[in-house]
Image 1 (tube, helix red, strand yellow):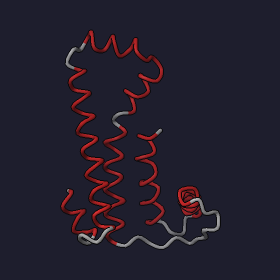
Image 2 (cartoon, rainbow, N blue to C red; image 1 turned 135 degrees about the vertical axis):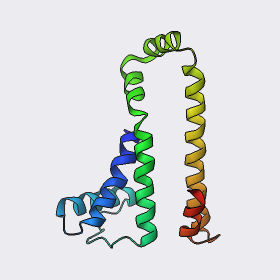
Image 3 (cartoon, rainbow, N blue to C red; image 1 turned 180 degrees about the horizontal axis):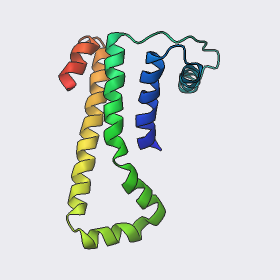
Image 4 (cartoon, helix red, strand yellow; image 1 turned 90 degrees about the horizontal axis):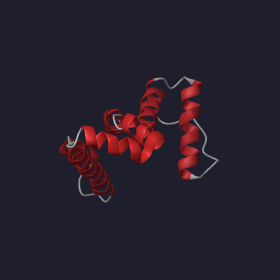
Length: 135
């Protein structure tokens, strides 16, 4: 669910910003915002994205596309567990090395995103400059 959510959530945000009159998209974003902020009193309409927010949202869509590449493996692991993974390693012995490397790069990318966001929040540099640094 996390991998799918990392694609669907920013995609809905970009679409709702592009179509501010679409009640379904606006409603989905308001509902998500209420849940995330734990505040049921948040009312619409949502403000339009600034250029920096739009840039970040589109970047998150790209990250979500990459994250969704993990979906098939995650589904197979959830359905078939250890027996499937053991069979995969027997047929493709280098898969174990590939998995750990892929996970490491994913972790480094996620940490870089968090660091860039926190640096901007604490005023190190404006977010647009830090976002460009990360690309």
